[in-house]
Length: 330
Ligand code: 13P
Image (cartoon, rainbow, N blue to C red; front, top):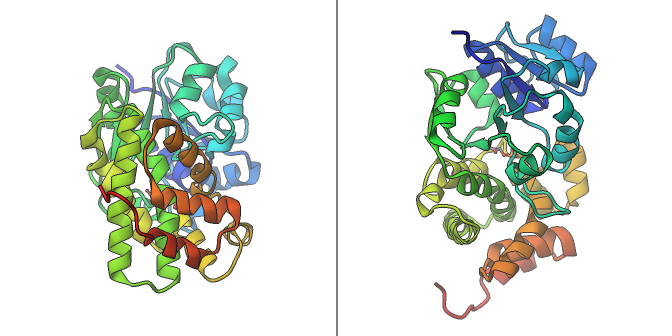
């Protein structure tokens, strides 16, 4: 029997990387908004804007025609930023075959609705099984072929097992779970904490501070994640602790770079313009504090990040705030 056709929407660094992996395993098409980028992928097998001269799988096809990209897809993979996730999905919904699984690569929450990406899939394309692939996956290191791993979460184990061989290679190990909420929330929240870690590093706060922030971040992430319905074990896994470590420490992390820039006195807008890319944690921070307030979960680090990112609080004050005497210390 033939292997499934994969369509990946979003030609940024991670969408391109996942498409390049899938193309090793099965027929894969990548939709890029940018026709010149699609052409470069087809002819040069590179995506220079996001991944420099790193070679992509040469059988990967790319198009700027979104309807064509999805029309014969058996699996739809979403690699666009969280704030355009809904509109891109609405654009393709009528062209997509019924019932095909949708896999989100997105680590963010929708600001206007506070929804998870798989919730948006259910709302826009009801009936499609919706899940997520997440883990410590700095795109360029995965393209370079260094060992890495991720977790694919689907609502049922059978679908996760069917998808696993499409996304895995001998150097990119894919684990399966049915905890969609846990994996999705972990992926979204770690970005906020990577900004916090970046601020500490930018202020030269040192190794004790970095370890404290990462460790306490994991606690906040797990508390909100379980309150939202995720399973405790998930937060100790690749999508939880694994991605938190990678994103809080990698010099490539966009979110960590936002934190470093803030500590150097730049504005969020300045850092994001310099990078020319989206740092998901900026918008997720506001959603997280509202969700945590609704669910009665105490999240001091996330609160300080919201104050810095959305209310103009100075970064030094945020770091003092984290050390403010707090009742309980659970
Ligand atoms: P950034 O968006 O901060 O680059 O995060 C990378 C990542 O998610 C690694 O798993």
